[in-house]
Image (cartoon, rainbow, N blue to C red; front, side, top):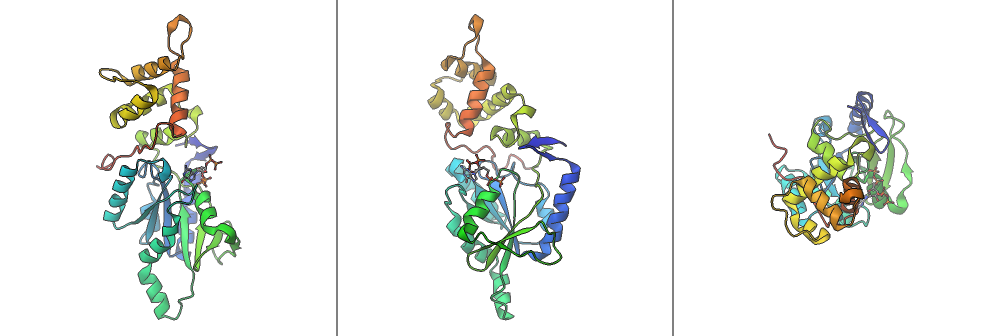
Length: 291
Ligand code: G4P
């Protein structure tokens, strides 16, 4: 595995280091917050996190919910709740939903808080490790939560010196763990979806093939968006590549001989999708990764 995303390489050495950092820091925290992408909560998950954090309470943030299909987000919230995982849909760019983070955290940790209080340690800070794959919005989350109090808290003894702690409101501290968390790259569907949203650099993908694979999903799950955006009224009997040709033709992307410049159409489609021009879209479906 050596996939380049935003100039970061995932390879076994980095993974081992991240694993070690998480394990070493875990005893210093009360809970872990994993930031996921609301458009693809499973594809943006780290495959080992459950095992790495053992019994620590987990709070899942479905970030970038401003770009996700609202119905699907509701279903994903139910999905995590059924697994007894605390979950919140948020938008760390605007801050939407983040006002519920501290109440959700306190609810998830109510036994721990009660036991601290019973032992006369009610003032003890609650410490949360924040993890997520690159580009997921971890810095945006920490900046939003820490706000003006972004002053770093001194590192706890015995823990890696690169760990950064941030005090946020109400005696809660966030740990921004160094190390790069990796997604589930051995699953090609996951690799594709991370590429669709632009999380994996384009150079490692063939844009035309990528756009065709995106069209497969859009034609199946969001045909109305394509109809609306590209004024296509009939997908019947069209293969995804032919849909790409049609989109290019509609946009006047013609090269000599009257052929459609499908590479240009592919780049445009990916750009428009990433820029939210096709509306709020969720790619991961509940149940599709089971089994
Ligand atoms: P990271 O630390 O996990 O690597 O991610 P970071 O916070 O840097 O966020 C990565 C990109 O995602 C940034 O965009 C950021 O603005 C955007 N982002 C984070 N959270 C949200 C969200 O909830 N909704 C939306 N729509 N975007 C979000 P960028 O293009 O790299 O920078 P910029 O647009 O902020 O200039």
